[in-house]
Length: 69
Image (cartoon, rainbow, N blue to C red):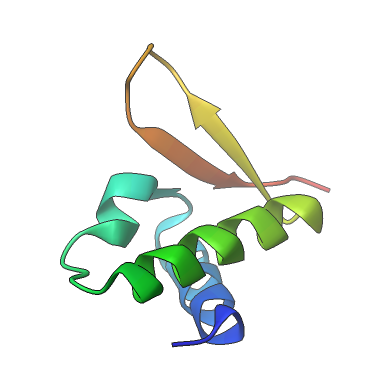
C-alpha cells in the first residue's frame, strides 16, 4: 500500500458518493500499515485543501467532505 494509492482511492470515493466517513474507509482493513497509509492520505488531502474533516458529536464518526471552491 502507498499513500498515493490511498489518495486515489479516497478521491474516487469522494467523487462517487460526495462524502466519506473515516470508519467506512477503514472498515475491513486488517493490516496496520494500510490503516496508517489511509490516515496519512487523509491528512495530505486536508493539507492540500481538497477535503475537510467534520465531526458532529463528541466521539462520533469523522466525515470527510470535499472543499468547495
